[in-house]
Length: 477
Image (cartoon, rainbow, N blue to C red):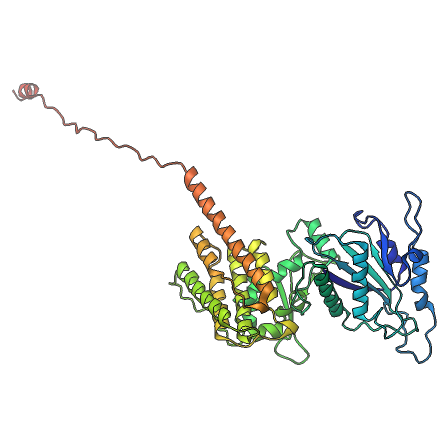
């Protein structure tokens, strides 16, 4: 169960959307499941056939505290230009059971109590309603003014909503999602997803840029090398320099051809792609990282074998490490680079099963609270192995796919990395599937190949001239 917090300025348009048919007629049976008053008093009247419910009376009730004058000396002064309507969409996981209206009402009350908007007992409640128009989610609409006229505080509301959703999922026996620990990458917006569908892209541009930047960061050893790799990968890159500074403090990337209505490239900063792709974090990762030292005479099999040896050693260190060991966290961050390199070798630029598993592992390997990993020799060795793998280009045979399958062990420590362990399992399953597909393709190619027929060469007799002795004798006579 997850919750997404939004802010708006007006209640009536939001209620009109929630009680309407939706963007694709996906809204069915919109109704209230809970509210600041009895639902029977707040529920809009049943409309005539073919007409929408009239939400104006309900919107007026919710807007009443916003229109009332603020008492003198009561908290922060209300500003007319601030978004005072709090909107939270709460959704259950796809595999969860269906919840009843009473259970959704309990979830809504728990979220409002955790955020302090209603039910906390410290201040008069804000006015709110919970609208349900689908089987798996509800919408909370709250006006951010308490009953005494003071402005409601919503500081850190997203973290509190995440905590309330996790507690509700445990209480109702639903699937638990990863905690809100500032490790998740920013998801593509609805507009980005719709544009990807219109343009026929396999995924939104934000996801494509994130994966390419991760690969470039895994193979780079410095800022210049990083910029060169991004440009060779077909991306536009620019760095941000503070006034009077020599070293850049940030960067942004863009995909050629992906432009705004005015023809300008759409730039994405590193922090807009993933928390660990900002330039300060990349510089911390590249400290002490030398360039790729692979000799040209070193074969591809030797590179894969060396990387598998380092990965096996890292797995052993993770199993021996205790819970919360900083060295284990650093090794996990180095293993994320290894997964990114392996995904590029298997799938190239296109997304694939291992690409999704590598994204999940990178998310699970990030430290909570934007903490930086400590330097560790094993993590540095994994980084060098990732750079060596990226120097191979693409896998060339089923044997290399088998070596790649052995390269990605279950790099996860004990109780602290449950989501990382699941991502590593998916990565191992993806590499096994790729290996089996490569083996099957090789077997079918060998079976359907036409046999080569060697030409049969027969010995021809040697013809010698026959000399007529009688004729020669006549001539000489």
